[in-house]
Image (cartoon, rainbow, N blue to C red):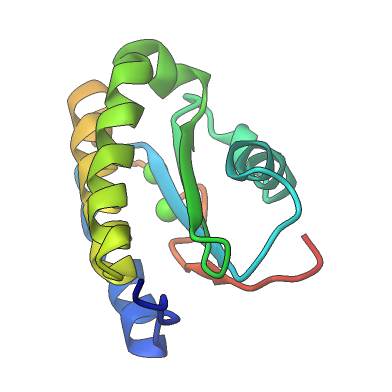
Length: 148
Ligand code: CA
Ligand code: CA
């Protein structure tokens, strides 16, 4: 099996742009968190990080977190109660399936980009952009923050 390569600084910057583009169409907030390894399962870890980085504080509860542990080859995607109530589990499963396809081929960056875009689509449908919207959570990708 092909080894997963890390995500390059250029790719991180492009992911940020992809998030910014997606958020132009929605009030929702998308974040990407990448680290090498975690002892926890990807879903537990994502839920922990979600809270830790303040993603529960969006006014419409419409934050979406895409989480990846590169060396563990694990990822998950979770949304806050507002967006989850609209899209349900099937939506997350569909995104996960797409991501799995990319990741299996070692296309981490493409997988993440697709997940950001698809999350953006869903958010735009249920939480359209309104004038005066604030960027409640930074669009910077968080990579390898060991303290969280
Ligand atoms: Ca916003
Ligand atoms: Ca944002």
